[in-house]
Image (tube, rainbow, N blue to C red):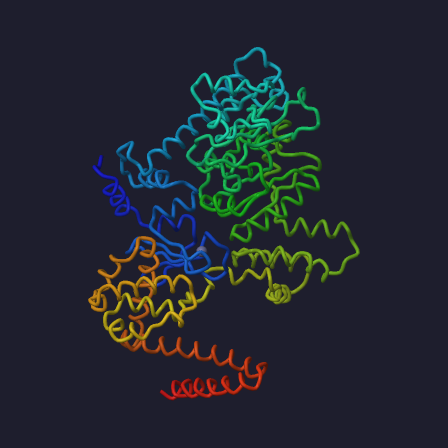
Length: 591
Ligand SMILES: [Zn+2]
């Protein structure tokens, strides 16, 4: 189907897709009446303040970000793409054919497309050099020696970057690419004197792709005959418009096709590990690319799997990395296991030696808790309590309560201590006690009185007529609520009919950026009103009194300070005010 305008296209996509389903792939959502709630994926929180309203097609965070929008803005934010990118992703999903060329800001999407093209051409160039140029036979020999077969080199589009300072540049210039584009794509660097140079020289090249299979960056390993010891053994593309390091997971684009939610995903440290593991016939393997394993990378993996198996290098650094990666993954609610490799080896070594041996190792994964316990025992001479103290912080990270329970059982059995003792100690671990992070146990979403009151002002004409003129921005402490209030106040001043507008009309008149916030407030209030025995105006009255009381109490506290600290004159004045305020407050309590 080809549609005539972009607004028709976006409308059709919104019609076809369920926002709760799309968001639900990134965020664990729980139904609460007409809306869904969950932990906001854009800030760190322990109680849910992220709301999705399927009937309105919007989302909003009531927590630290106080951001919101529609299905497109959500995908833009979570995938780190621009509007055309989100449009494309969602159009594919909805089965809507986009008319080309008019998507969003054409100039910026053209610019991005040129960068993608440049990176694609570069990957092909490096690959061609590796596969076909007799002059660099050595690079092919080197991969041969590391055990990487020809077919595998093709599968991963491995390449070789020649050692010259401008080989790639010359090639790209001839293809019509400008130096600023090479810099923007991260394949060239610029010296202090402003001279351009090829970033990758004398290196085996691993193209890194996004989830749609487009090359966004490169990793490069120095070849032994160009190694001087001064350069990094591995280098990566810098962060660019297309490459956000902390989000990209190497090989996830291929692995995701083999990951069903029940299947665990193997996480290794290096590009070569991934390549060799796949060559051994294990497809569900990824590596964090160019960084330590980040929460964002876990978020990407969580979309496709519930369980990670870490197979890090069997050395001290690898073990440390595994502990930190385990914590990150457990905090995100994933199950985690550790694969123990023979000391001093990495997955690529074993895969080269014997694919069968690799598979045997991978099958023998264990919980990191049990591995840690074993290490502690090897050190010897410790009491049970000391073991427990070392293990508790790790166990406390498990955001998945069922999984945490299993870990408790495991440790209880290994140390022969009662489970109840471990549980009570876990509950006392204040910082890391993540039981409350589990959404199943999360309490009611807390809507503040001022949020609720503003929502009422939108939903209910009666409440608005009775109370709006009594509102005052001094009652409002929350910035987002205050902003919305100021806009309503502006409407009120401009048109007296405002007070009688139905909610729908009022929403139409709000600025675009306020709509998702106001809509979500409305959804929450409507739902709460259904459960309330009061009329909307009565609800509003109760809330307003509460806010006034809060304000008076704060003023009283302030005056108490003045009374204690001020001079005689100041004290007399403060005392007078204090009596007045206290009287007003007392009257309110009586009513
Ligand atoms: Zn948030």
